[in-house]
Amino acid sequence: MQPPAETPSDEAEIEEELLPLVEVLNILSERYLEDVSREELIKEAINGMVNSLDDPQTNFLDSAHFEEMMIKIDGSFSGIGIEISEVDGYITIIAPIKDTPGEKAGLLPGDRIIAIDGQDVVGMTTMEAVKLIRGPEGTSVRLTVEREQLTEPLEFQITRANIIVPSVFSELLAEQIGYIQITSFDEHTGQDFQKAILELETEGMRGLLLDLRNNPGGLLDQAVLVAQEIIPAGPITHMVDRDGNVLQTYHSYGTKKAYPMVVLVNGASASAAEIIAGAVQDTDAGTLVGTKTYGKATVQHLESLSQLGGLRYTVAKYQTPNGRDIHENGLEPDVVVELPDDYYFLQYGIYSDLKPGDEGGSVLILQKMLTALQYPVQETAQYDGQTEKAVRAFQAAHGLAASGAVNQATREELTTQLEPLLEEMDLQKKRALEILRTALR
Image 1 (tube, rainbow, N blue to C red):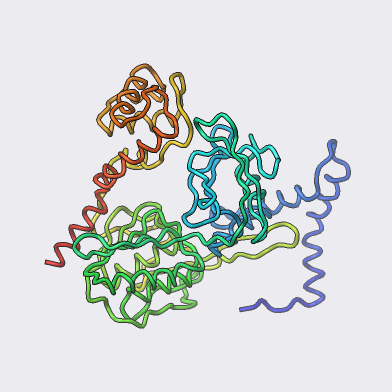
Image 2 (cartoon, rainbow, N blue to C red):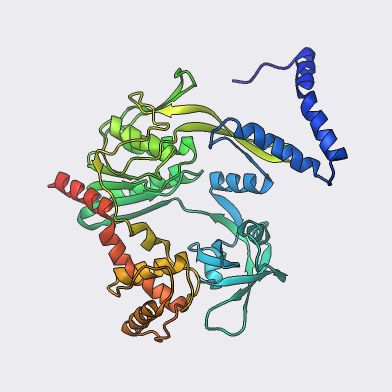
């Protein structure tokens, strides 16, 4: 519903209300002891208003963060398709996205970008580097990269393309159990999910495991498209105002699936992921397994601001089909299963070289990895002699040069050796599969 048009008298009242704000802006920008930017003062004034609401989902986004938010919503951007992070002052490639120009050019995890189009980027923030790497489709960018064990930097001239970031991953597991993971809800999620579930059903899927763990949510319309594939006819979610009045109800028009379904959730399953999980639980469409969800079920609008980025603000909240309020409450799974404490540590990975004498979080993760792989060391976060000895033993056992220092080859081998162990430690997924197997007997 559009707000009523402002009359001239309304405009006069608004201008009078804002007069103190404008006066303070003028005084500070013109008379303050030091030079201050009017734009920065305006940004901080907006931030002050937003922060006074004490709503973490309502925030002011500067131009760079507004652009990133729009990319997340759209699920695509024009670039070369690499995931990067700042590691020890270097822009480091965490992973190239499959079938993108970055992967096809030969960029590898662990590569350190030291220049972009000849511009030194050592010490640059990730956001600053992203702005240099992205650009119009069909244009090119030149990356200068340092790679372990090579004495000279590598040069990559890469043509940018439209990159679609996948959010739906599927496979058919043993005993014809389908597995679909949804990592977020962007413009492509609903269609990709429909395609994935159809392919699995065509392959003879007898049960579905839907993984919504660590899914922060996203677009409501895409969550509805996903829900319409798996929820029987009836309400999916209700959108309500601050007083609990229903503004809109979203429906499914299908029939209950002929096969059993289990949905995995955890404390990082939020928003759109909780809408689906709540609908599954209220309609008995499947079983929720994992830990209590995040409890973020509010509706945000995103609007651009002239010259200053954008504003994301809360306008309503969701309820489950049975009218349960998810916001700040979360959803309790039907079957609660905790993961081992070290599971997430082992998932983090190591993205920089390590050597004796180093200390910090990466060293602690290394020590946890070694212990998990039966090379026990004390978890001190210090690369001591015991850790060096364990690294040498691991390297020797896997055909690597036993230097005692962690290089790229060692990091990759650690990741490879940990994969089956992480699968074994995923007690939530194991319990979900047990439930499905029992239902199929």
